[in-house]
Image 1 (cartoon, rainbow, N blue to C red):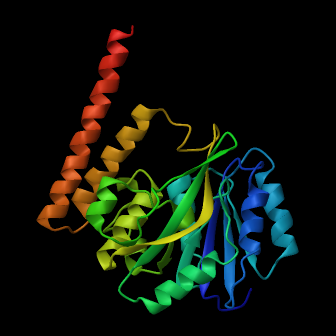
Image 2 (cartoon, rainbow, N blue to C red; image 1 turned 90 degrees about the vertical axis):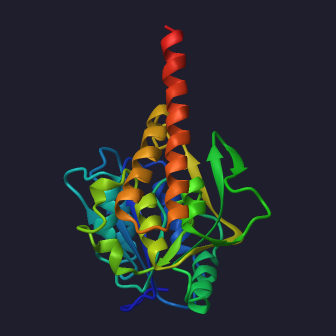
Amino acid sequence: MSGNHPEVSVAMIAFRHEKFISRAIESVLSQNAPFAFELVIGEDASDDRTREICEQYADRYPTLIHLLPQELNLGMTRNLYRVFEQFKGEYIAVCEGDDYWSDPFKLQKQFNFLEENAKFSFCYHRVKTLVGGEFTDLIPKGRSGPVGINQLHRRQNNKLVSMMFRRTPGLFDYSRFPLEGFTTPDYRTTMVLSIHGPGYLLNDTMAVYRLHPGGIYSALPEERKLRIGIKNRKAALEYIPMNFKDRMICRMMIFLRAIKLGGIKLKAFFDR
């Protein structure tokens, strides 16, 4: 499971996740994989027991878990990429501290797929969303296969908790693809990877994505989420090479989100 030269590096970012972090870590530790992997945890200056819990696991599994504590909060994107920079593996997977993996063979399945399909830069799988104790499917059933950049512009449902991708130099080219240009790390990561090859949606459901009041993104109002979607796609137009069709689809998605945002503002005006 662990080793000096891991095939897969797993990133876990944690901030105020004391209620969830143990479940997340245990779901990684329970992976049944015939290759070596590592878990690197970026603890982002939490003011609860998150760091303490992470330290306990790091002490218990010193050859498998590497803890990166932080004294000043960096935010989700910079925290995730400082973790990425520490990796040794050729493949990268992510499990945020408030999510968890539900299939003990997740790493093996995704590793096998990427090993056997060199043209794909990443793969992801179906995810259950957990809200108030209720599970729902994040991705409609029945659809799997290759996913191009235009599909990702329309609906980005490849949550980080579901992804495994190749270690790609472009991810760390901050001058070409600045971290500040993109609002969320999942969108930047997906867009940069898409330059090097399409993604692939696997049919398995292998993780749980939590929506809870303490979640950095899920706690945001709908207006803020729309603004994030618009900014991310504007960044894609500026930094990501695309053909004419893909650029038009990206512009259309910006336009549709702007209409929704205008509707929210109009409703707020008349509700005064």
